[in-house]
Length: 188
Image 1 (tube, rainbow, N blue to C red):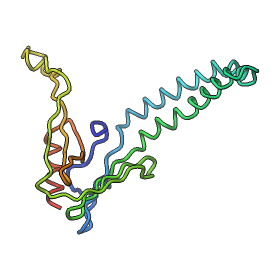
Image 2: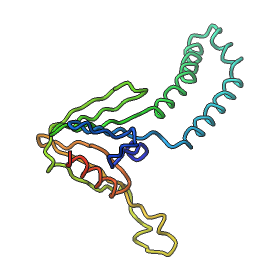
Image 3: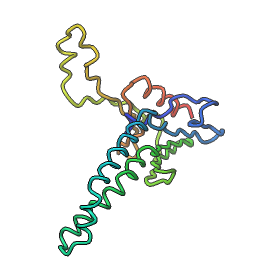
Image 4: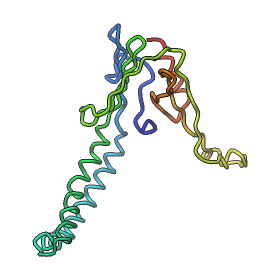
């Protein structure tokens, strides 16, 4: 999710997403852009009209005598209820990277509740940037004028090594951001 949820790459006093207290560097990812709230509003609007359209038949199915139909009605009710909550969880997702000397702790949070937390002991020498490209870069190979915007540049992963095993710190579509984040982590 590093391509959507951007991690700050500079330590700024005006930014509440970066903090250094003299011992621990803390970086927290930014939320989704505001346009995604419009997508969520559109989703809720469609869901509202779907519920209006199926409310009466769903109530009949739930009150019916056929067990299979009741289970299908219950599953549909659960899906329609949990769908907005799950999608809202993406809006309140946050990745937190803490660095204290040689220990990096990566925490994934939803609604500010940590659900995955892993700590790694690393050397600054083991942090590296890897480039990945998933598909063929046809636009770059053909070099046609006007096709520059369609070139697949792939994405970059900031990786580190602990006891011979690689782990992901962050990923981004811009190499410059990964380079700045690497320098920031190596500095502290």
